Image (cartoon, rainbow, N blue to C red; front, side, top):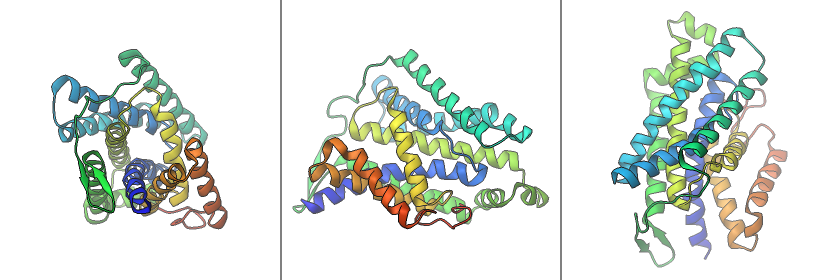
Length: 293
């Protein structure tokens, strides 16, 4: 029983981790909380479902298309809602409100295009259950966990080993200093938001597949969960976002398994509050800035 729930929790936590990494990237570079991330997550889920039901593609093709759409939305978000405010050097509240407006717009757009009803993937689209004796795991869980781990590994390599990753880290430290070294901060910020949004869209497809329920308001609660993981791991810290995602997933599953199913969100967020009493800066955050990519 314990091992089974642990596997379920780690699988769910991997999805939360991918979602939270997107928020972490944007915060690390722009120092703002992107409240439109949940909306892009939801659009990604619908795009993945659309590709599967209309074009009958496999889940990996659907994921790639959803990530491409997410990246495009991320560029538009940065170009339309964030860049003009950044040039005017407004307070941090202005971009926050701007991203909230984008989130509301995306939710309204989804309601217009797909309606308010909950949609799901075709029956037995990805079936199968593997029995390891001590625990069972479905093909959907294997795909979700596998894709999430691969995305996290790729992102770590990109951030730590590539020129674009080094540029992202430089801009996160100081846009002025990065510009002196020949880095184009505007381009790097756009690329960062695009990567973050692509990850959010991928998480949307994986969560939609795992719960087999996709609807226009799904980005709201998941956005708050991503924000909770962002704070838990340490603001702007990618490793913290990964660990925080797994902690939240395991906490949710164990709260359901041991008698608190109606309070799964309350139990999970309560645990995060207790952890923050111990480390207000988050698990991997520094006391001043919370962390950087």
